[in-house]
Image (cartoon, rainbow, N blue to C red; front, side):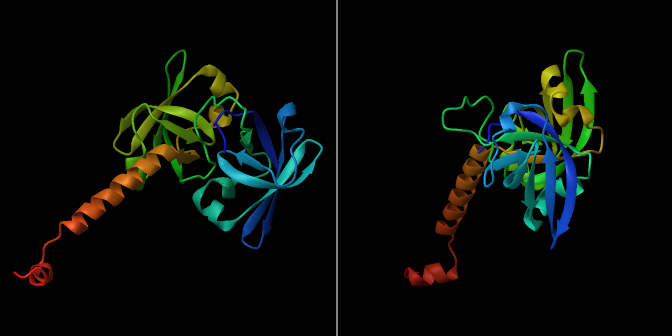
Length: 218
C-alpha cells in the first residue's frame, strides 16, 4: 500500500523484453529513501505496484508482466523515461495522501493543461466504465500521485496542481495527449460494488413472472 506522496523521480535505464513481459531497470536520484531498498519489496513506479527483483548502487529492477502492461503505460517506457517513485507505506508512517494500492485501473489521456497563475489545472479524459468511481472533491491517483478531483464533467475531470508537486514529479513533462496511469479511490470502488450488488439483489427478489405466479398458486 502507498499514500500517493512521491518520494523521488527516477529514470529508466534498462528495458529488456522477457517472454511477453519486461524487465525494467530504474535509477533513483540522491534521495536516501531508496538506499535501503531490498529484493521482494514493493515499490510504486508511476502508480503501478511492482516487486523489486534486483538491487544495486543507485538502481533497482522489476519484472513487469503482461497484465500490468495491458492496463498501464509501463509498456511505453524507454531508456531515459522519467518515473514517479514511492516505497510502500509503513504502519507508523503519516498518511499524507490517501490509500493507494498501486493497482492501476486504466491508462487515460491528458485532455488539457491550463496555467492558472499560482497553480496548474490538469484535465484528464477517462473511460466511461469508471464513472461510478469518481466524485468531485474525491481522491484519485495519477501516475501514483495522490490528487483531489477539483472539477468533474462527462468523462472529464480536473485536478489542481500546486507548484511544488508540479516541479517534483513527472507532471511537468505532461502535455496534451500524454498517457497517464489512473487508480480510482478504493473506498469509492467498494461503495459502488455494494450498491450494484444490492440493486441487483432487489431486482432479482422483486421479479414477478409466469413461473413465480405458478409456484405461488396463482
